Length: 304
Ligand SMILES: C[S@@+](CC[C@H](N)C(=O)[O-])C[C@H]1O[C@@H](n2cnc3c(N)ncnc32)[C@H](O)[C@@H]1O
Image 1: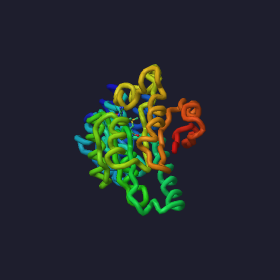
Image 2: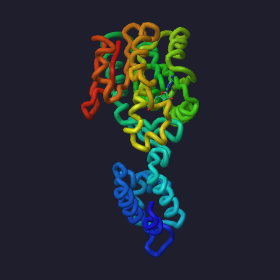
Image 3: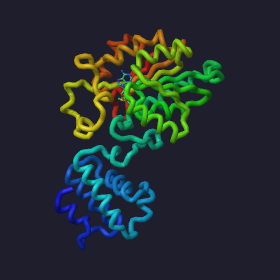
Image 4: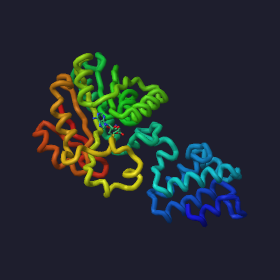
């Protein structure tokens, strides 16, 4: 916050007296900084400072604020003003209508990744109609699980009996993922190591997978300067960048791995970067199907 704005919320006579007044200040501050959706972010940050969710905040808009609450809200706004991601500041982000705990060391779940969940549910429903596959336990694998948003959501959303495994090379990410799965009551077994190597070992030990999902790192290192400071300065490089000079490394590697890890009739769903969709056909021949996200960007590659 600028000196002026911070002065306004630090005990001077014109300090905000209610959550409504605090919200007004917060919105003005975020708008002036040009930060995202100022209205939504102000709600999230002020609610977090008061230890409430957004609904709780709206229910006490006109109650008086305590001095500590004003200071807490001010601190969170100062952090946001320094371009820390809102999800890290408030400590969580919604994915498929559930809250996932996040912080430094793990990628913040993105709304476009929900398309993988939608598609996975459709694939399972369709295969239920064709075969008796719903009667056996279906094996699911998430490669590069991050916060565990895909693995935990699949464990909770897929119909029938499922056994969900998830891999990440980052121990920090796995710490967040395990916390999220436990908090949500999602049955997921986590594995540490390289996603491709561990996937093969898991398939050899426990049998191939009916569904493999992955949102792999796909930003080209040369695109670093195009990223927002929130992403570039705060989210883990391991989660963002494809190997230099080889932006399609993960699509190619996962596609090549199919005969070793995918069950007969199984499906692989891979999230694509915004430029990768155009190349996906060339990489996988005519065996793939590309699904568009809500912004009409080719977003998920489906392989069989
Ligand atoms: C783009 S993030 C996706 C996280 C999460 N699935 C999501 O959709 O929000 C990619 C994840 O892959 C992990 N990762 C990167 N290289 C890996 C590797 N060689 N093996 C396994 N995981 C890897 C990163 O640590 C990161 O958590």
